[in-house]
Image (cartoon, rainbow, N blue to C red; front, side, top):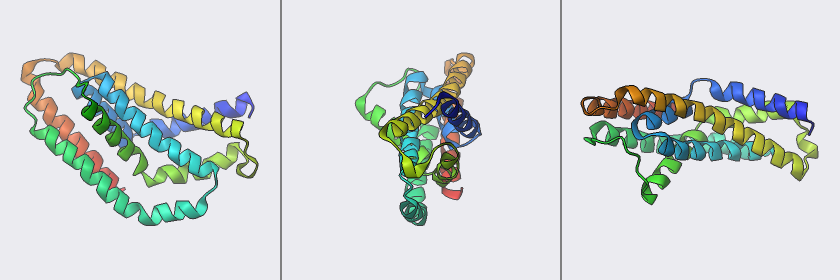
Length: 202
């Protein structure tokens, strides 16, 4: 895969990923409330979800894609319920610290939350299935090309989510005081609930 094609693929992915969606909003909310490290775990989970769809698209598993679309309603309901539950917990939180948690269970929850946001968006698989053939020949894939595509798209998606993370950190500097914490909990909680509703309805 030549460099120009690879760069074109990354630009197309960047334009797609930067468009407002549940992934960006989720990372922004987590970053603002908990800081950059937890938001990174959410970003990683989301990126893994995207990579799975990229792999499916490159394998041209159209039949599997149809199966995914047929079962997506159930996946979306479960994923949306999980995200709404997280948002409800955050909305009711009375925490008084912006310090990010380093507990293993928290990391796992953040990874799962990011993964759910990424993998429950049906337009992702449709997008990759539709635009990947423009850049690569799915019928003559080599292992080297597959790795290049997965790494390139994965890094691009993670980079876009990192931009949302940075924005959340910058916002956090203006609101890091005890009087604002309850409002921040409510705002981020409502944001996560809305992300869950978006996932369920989109």
